[in-house]
Image (cartoon, rainbow over all chains, first blue to last red; front, side, top):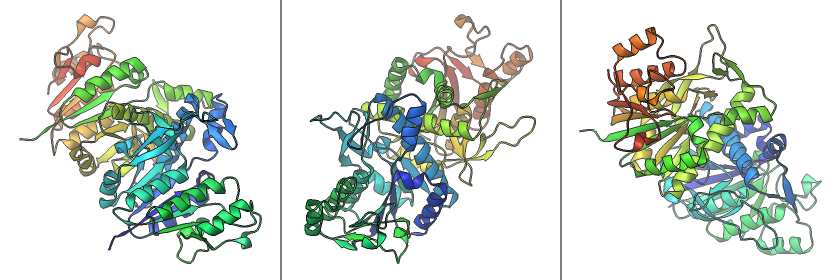
Length: 258
Length: 258
């Protein structure tokens, strides 16, 4: 029987709240067995870019990553946020290592092809270096990923954090029974975003397609759930979405079914 | 017989020059055997701090690292510069990993005691996790260190890059025959800073003390040479200082003798 590996994705807005981050990391450290943390970047990159005089361009809520933006992302996601999380984990006696995709060639990606919109330095993951990740896990070191991948030509690329988590979970399924947790601001998938009691506790792809067709599920939830269903279809044994209580045993959340 | 391990320290001003950095990394990749790269930060941190509205305070040419400065250092040294170097090495087919002291608990330091001057978030290295570094070298992965260490309580600290290189070289001497290279803007130690022909090709501690007493060696060269003599006294088998040609076999440089 394969050992269980938990992959936790935490959003950028959540980690910007210092008190929340501390309590979340406390729960994370308490979790038994091998585990991986993937974090987003939130508003800090936009704030730093603004102060540096770089305009952040968004199209349909998605960042256009020009050369200056990519520099800021490398600073903020790959440096400030990533290293701060690793240092906090060390202070809680959890050995950890901060990684971007270039480190140990761990997340190799391709520059996204330009169709209607040129998103700039944005990549889609092509290959996960599972042997390297496993060598860290075997040493009881928690890999902490910032959402940056790297092309074979050494170009750093901004990469969707949910996709990073999902692709790592899928790839690591060859060694482990993998479980993927998305930690959100809400309790999970809601049919009414303003009402936490409208939580969907289980969601299969048929129900999902119906909810998309009827426009109950929209916007940012669409790519996130796309990643969830990709994961569950491609070998991940458990995918759940929930709020900060997600790492506790009695959490209320949304579970993804095939 | 122990295997040879080369530890190369490159200054921040040098790596800010893109053409120079590329040619330097090309030579670095060509070097055979296990190797480690340590880089400084240069002026980029001061530039970013300035744009973010943080004043950089210096006393006697040394940076006072307050909380804001430490954030900028984590962004610039630990993120932008470190990850860019790693990505460039990957593009040259040299597997590498970027590390700050918190990663893998690799450089544990103590906050520097306040005597006359409070330097703020500045640390002196207490312990190097040699087993972790060795596990990377055994996988043919080059560790690339930014000059940031971490206390046992998870506080990131600005740390002198020459000391980082020197302490790593000393600690790794238990596994390897270590060689420490400091890559500077000048050909090595000069008796007249404006005249490259005044290079001292070999320097022992007696000559060094005489040159310090007669004020031929001053300023930034003093702590650098202090690190060199510490290294050669504490188990490092070869310490040299030179310019970018340092990594080539026929380089002209200063060699440190006991």
